[in-house]
Image (cartoon, rainbow, N blue to C red; front, side):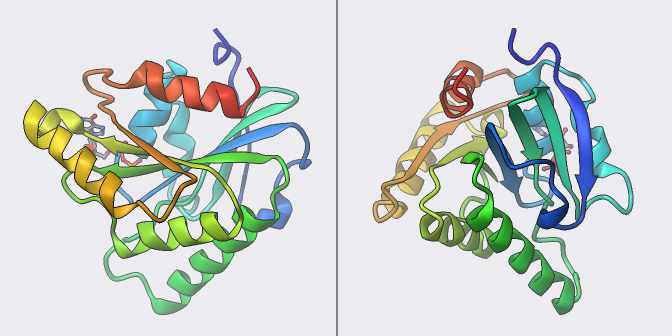
Length: 195
Ligand code: GDP
């Protein structure tokens, strides 16, 4: 049970305020409402782990959770809010680019997309940042329970096809509600965290 001891570490608006850059880190990103909090809670087996990230005033924070003194999960700010001022969007892009490119301990990015709305402009931006940073990405197509088996599988294949030029990207179906794809996701995260 590697996640049994997971605990909140730090919540900061800027990457340079992050905890010491040692050991292994896996970050979670996604458009707001993609199901990031639900996935984090389900993957760690903790009902309210990601609650902190939803505290007003902290939605643009990087939230760090520690598994032990060498391993961390990071909840990155959700993106794609409607009617966010352009300055905030620009700031978000700079924060993400800086974190993804400079964080030495960052071993991989879990990118969450609602299976009914995959590959938004912001998702592509995250994929570009990650490719530039030479960072592996694992996509969770979330809320897979919202589609029937056939359409879900077709979406998986279609998205995979669109990502043919991104060899560092893998993807899978996921449902926090049905606990679908839990083992596959935990396997990827465990490998990145050197568990
Ligand atoms: P976040 O904004 O990315 O952290 O998204 P949340 O985890 O808060 O989820 C957004 C909404 O989607 C909530 O109403 C969740 O109950 C719902 N949701 C999240 N995961 C799933 C899932 O696997 N299946 C279904 N049907 N709904 C989900």
